[in-house]
Length: 348
Image (cartoon, rainbow, N blue to C red):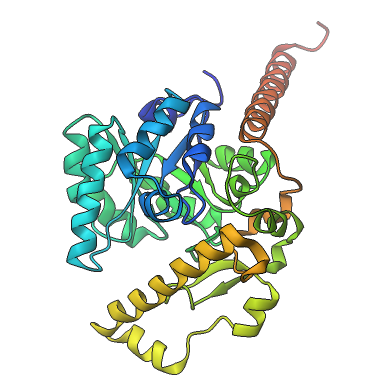
């Protein structure tokens, strides 16, 4: 069996166990389609599709389908922040299902109602988790796999490194996807060797020609080092990984005392997170599309340390696949040689 064939690739019908994670505001239709066309799977982020890239959701999905006939996925954030948002998400999921999407990644809430809808048409649902507690809850909700968000991820990062998270979740008997810190071929192979069924990358795909992010954003990723990634509470009320820029240094990364107090309040936290989210959605959109002429406010993960240039999606994915296959072939040859050596008796 090919090293690139895993439980995950069989689940979603793709060739290479690699996801382009859903990114607000960077998941434009052309990027999503390019990743799927190259053998991985791109994920539609509906808020980015509609409010950043100005596509009606159904028409945006149809645009992607014109660009590739390969499977694509859909990101459903299922946190119950408001009845209006929940109703919109339910409608968006219905549209995605009607348009043939069969792979969904849920986050920040109970995924059971999504699972019910998706399983009814033979689809699969994976859920974002950062620890065992939330993983078990997601499995109780019927998910088919887990996106394991570690401390090296961009955006909402986890608290544990790849190895710790795999050890903690590996006994749950579902496919695990490594999310965070994958910026080069060796990172990809390391994750598969560890036992993960695939990887999810975001930062690497922002620095591609198909991504519509501003060139300043892409070059900030290329120029950044691991130590340039910091966590800020000022985007959504929980730590988010961003590139340390003069703007970030000026504004700071910690919520003020009132915000912290409200974030600890059972009801106040929802209003505070809504305030942060609405503010940051606008800031992230402006910075992504307008670059440092607006505000250098860029989400990214620690994988920046191994990203050296802006490349096409196909170049990135095919290089990963070739490197993995070569590594696998060499491993097989060494294994065969070792086996032959063991079977040669003295004097033969």
